Length: 211
Image (cartoon, rainbow, N blue to C red):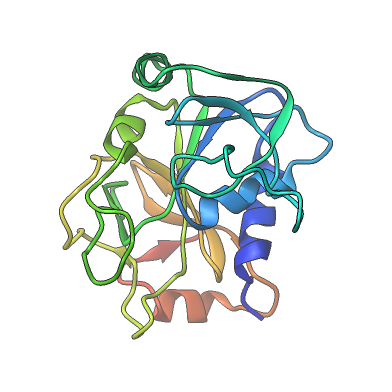
């Protein structure tokens, strides 16, 4: 069966090394904070939180503690708050080891498209994603493999306006984990349980290579 969203976040969380400073985008990326227990990982949010913890338990929410997507959060031991200028100085200065973002499309050369499409009530425009795509040391995308109507999100060239050029290094979907390599494009790393390579290729809009 394909990964659930929580399983996607857990699969990505397992790959985050000890000691990294990580920025999590809106949506599925925020779930990654629930899946790094036992590792010292510092989660940073554009609104000035350094040291986010997992999502709060029901009934233990603090309405004053939110991330950049206005989702309720907890704080890890030693967490701190900084102003927007300092937060973006971290991002633009190359001090973020990893950024995890959602996407509408990822191209085989690593181009990223994740601007809001205005098709629903999601956050408008691009937010801090453009800064993160340019400033983070590495960028991983976590998203469903296809749209709700079955169109592929892994494509040869993005059709939506670009957030960043050749910036995505790895993609986690409900079907597979896929590296984005300059010389090869999309290269399979792992499959969700019960999912076949043929299925992944059939639901992708670009070639999926194997090592």
